[in-house]
Image (cartoon, rainbow, N blue to C red; front, top):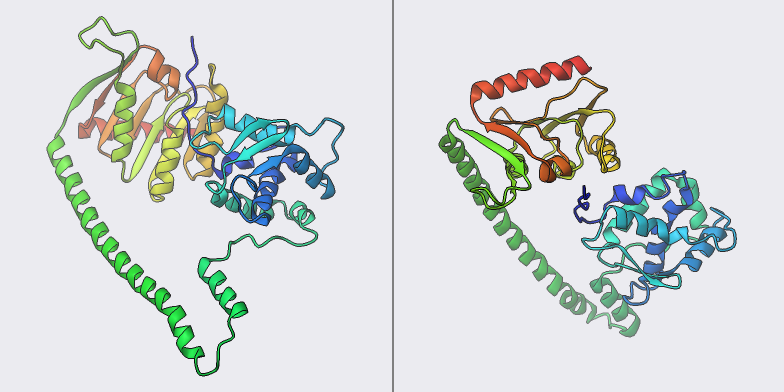
Length: 370
């Protein structure tokens, strides 16, 4: 059976913090900081400062006494980044591209904010190593604004007379004051538009709940369904889950043997709605070709604030409950194989009695696991 590729996404700090995790090679965690340092010290010049060489990074690591390389033992300095990028499909957009002969292009300034955030976390977690990197002092990490540069140039090039100084300062500040006024007006308009949109959204959701009524639907995953009345592959279990997650407001309950898709969706929902209660019941040891992805999903969700409870052997139900409004019970785990490649089926309903009983079942299993 062919394994589906990991969906493409952007880099985040969790990905960078996994550098050197296998084997506890901590010096690799300094590489993004050194890439950022080169970019800043060389004036953020695209086409120049965003190119790095493996040997230069290796010499910088050795001079900081973080590591001593054997001959021809420096390839892992950049290869660690490219491996993570390839295996996790971090291509929206890519962070690094190998150009040959130890030369790599780094996607800056797009990822500068991410590297700045990572640098601050690295300084906090590895304070001694961070100090070794900058024994002679750190660069000015934040760029000088255009206005500051213009004022500094004026101070160097122009000597103002005492009588004309006030008018000159006023003329310099006038564009800034106008920009601030325009900004305040724009913010006021956006706040007013946002309030209107929120009111419309609340009205639409209220109307949607009124119109839904009590419904029942049969959903399924049928990869080979082209000769049926459907005439095509059917993935209505996956489609139903995507729609249910978008309607979540208060709570999400998930029961699945393993999860290798929808983990990112749950993490994104938790970050967007911090008060949203998300609870996941899953098995201790995932199975199949993608078990590594499924196993890594557990700590990633926990780090995002999602409650994940692991059962050793008794859990066998596949279920998703949204708020106290709807429930999906099916034979499919939340992984690519059972969502797209196998024949699986289930029932979705918003019947209040069924939803309430599903919640009682879930909370009972959850209580038994504690």
